Image 1: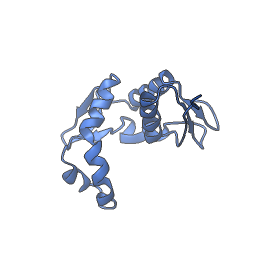
Image 2: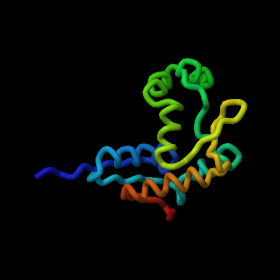
Image 3: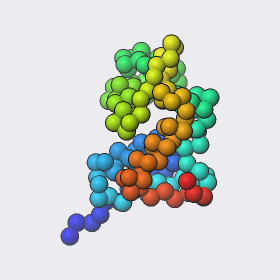
Length: 138
C-alpha cells in the first residue's frame, strides 16, 4: 500500500499559491495544506501595483533581469534561469489571464485589477483541491 503524499506549504501569498497549485498539478492525489498566519490570503497581491498587481517584467534575459535586484541578484539568477518572466506569462495564460506590458516593462493583468490575479489563484487552488488553514476564511 502506497501512503498518500502529504505536503505542507507555509504562506498563503502569491508564492504559496503558486507552489501549492504546481505541486497539485504534478501530484494530483497528494494532500496539500497551505498554512497562512493571518486571517486572509493574497492580501499583498490585492495591493501590489497600486491595486493592479505587477505580475512580472518584460525582460527575458536573466542576467539583465537580476540587475533590478541589487540585494540578491546572485541568488536569483538560477531561479530566473529556470522559471522567469516568459514562463510566468505562459503560466498565467494557461489559467486564462492575459498580461499587458507597460512602457517601462512592467506587466499587469489586462483587466488592470489585482482581483483578476487573486481570483484566478483562488479558483485554481479550489479546482486543485487545496486545503487552506488560516486564522479566518478566504
